[in-house]
Amino acid sequence: MARKKRNTPQFDVEKSLRDRRLEQVIFRHGTLAVVIKSIGFYGLSALIWPRFIAPKRWKLTRFDVAMRYLSAAFDGYKIAQLTDLHTGSTDQNYLRRVIDAVVADQPNIIVITGDLIEYRAGSLEKLEALLPMLHAADGVLAIFGNHDYHEYSWRHVGPRSAHRTIHKRLRKLLDKHHIKLLRNTQHTIERGTSKLYIVGMDELWTGNADGQAAFSAVPQHAACVCLQHNPDGFEILRDYPWQLMLCGHTHGGQVRLPLVGSLFVPMKHRQYIRGWYKLLPDSHGAEKQMYVSSGLGQSVPIRLRVAPEASIFTLRVKV
Image (cartoon, rainbow, N blue to C red; front, side, top):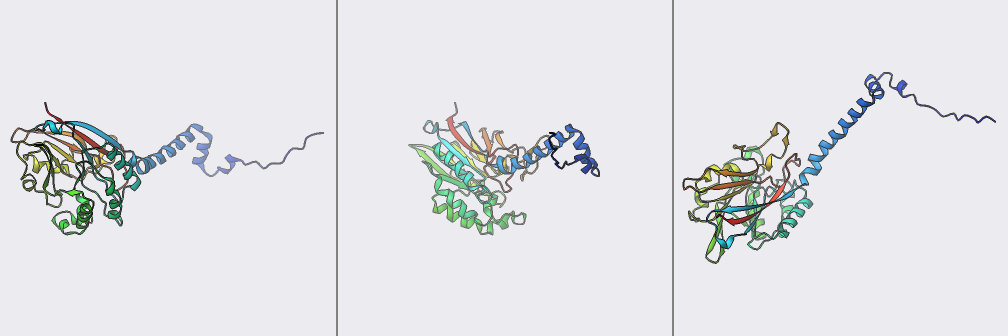
């Protein structure tokens, strides 16, 4: 007995594409279909990576830094630098993981080189949840960045920003959690009769940075680390007695396109965008070096080819 043929409806793909020429070509040419699918896949991946993955793929960078005038009592002294947290726009759990890792490294001191917050609702509250996690044997120091000083907009860059209110509330918050804020002032660490000076500059864009006030108590031949948010500030500080400057602000360029480079870097001297720079000796012949960190957060949560970072600097006696 002949088997009864099952009557199943068949879908004629080519017929359905009769009036859609491009789709007909894709259907008939498998290679073209693969190319278009690949473009879609990698295009979508290119959007997902810089937005959701890259901003949290941070690294802990470590450096040994030989410093002139450093006493043997401070050989091996560890300074941890955090910068550009932009709390409020940066993922809170990610910042917690970073802080946990940095504190676990047991630095002697932690310094925060500006832009602790992003001016958004709840930014101060989120920062307050992080501050108790920060602790080191010689304490925690901080300086202000441009985002800390005002409800950030281009209208308020300049002296007017010093009259805004956000930085006043931030100062009280730091004081509450025993974090010392340096504004054109210096902090001295002592080991017996030896001293290490850490100078913190006020924010450059507000017009408040004052090198003369900041270094007034620092001897000419003393070991000194300078904290400066914006690398542009090195111009006004070149002849002051520091050997190592730690900066942030640039986010390392944040988004670096092949052949093009960084699209937006809000500073004058774009050559100081990230990493190490040896500056020309000052008028006293002293060597100076500056490190520009890529920072941890960002106003717009997108990064491409620039990893976020926290850094540990181990000071060494210069032989």
